[in-house]
Amino acid sequence: MTKVTKSGPPARKATKKAVKAPTKDAAPEVSVDDSAAQVRLRRAREIVNAFDLPPKTKLFVIEYTKDMNGTQAAIRAGYSAKTAQEQSSQQLSKLMVKQAVDAVMNDRIEQGIFDGDMVISRWVEISQANPNSLTQYRRVNCRYCWGEGHRYQFTPAEMEDAKQALFDANVKRVLDELPELEWDDKGGLGFVGNRDPHPECPECWGEGVGRPFFTDTRKLGRESLPLYAGVKQTKDGLEIQMHNQTDALDKLARHFGLYKDKLADAVEKSYTREALEERFAGAMLRAQERQRQVDEERGTVVNG
Image (cartoon, rainbow, N blue to C red):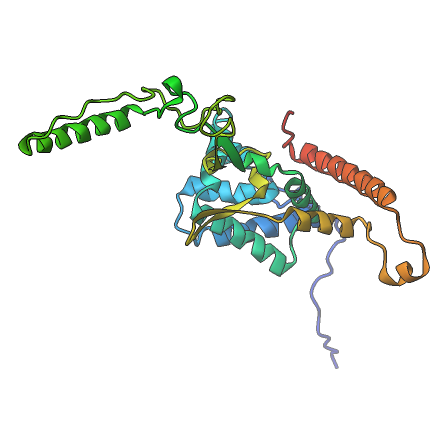
């Protein structure tokens, strides 16, 4: 009897498995921070692309929401470094651009992918912004300040209108057989609305007249831009809206633990005003230093 056995596959020789070298297209390893940045970038692109904006403006919005630095965002978006600040102010003054920025920021808060350093930097910028560089109340000259003999002073257009009105009146007076009225230059030409008051004006006593002044929001700089929150039309006119500086300071104080716990307040002696101001000043210096470090890391240091 012949014994039949089922033969298996021939035995393989042991070989050393070659390790493939990474190709140029292979994705590099990314850290957790890099992954978070990629998520923020992807979400920003998705949101901004839904807005009807020019491609370059969309790129500006995406870059701006990275670090809230308008000048650097404009440069990264392809604008000239010489005009980057002006381009940034112009872009951020547009309603749809502001809506796109707000949409990206609100999404980050909702998704929990907001950069903590960016939040703190924003609070610091708002708290230190100068409201007077955004809106002012000015005392300017009255109509009699700089006129000859402190009489009413005209602008060229006003004088032309006044002479035409006098001519029309005299035509009617002639038809009515009345004597013609003579022209009076009064204080002459040269009224400039934003000139300082005359200190010896007998009409306004050197005080001039008070007028509100709003800076052109297309030209806002870093000193005032963080504070600007838009313009609102009211029944009384235009209203410049600003972010709440006290609220920003409050958030910074809470972040740095400057407020004492309520239970601890009941047991321990509360801080004196001088001690609290000293702690707050120290915390603000640390926040500014941290912001400077963040700016250096991102290459967004602005001289001055």
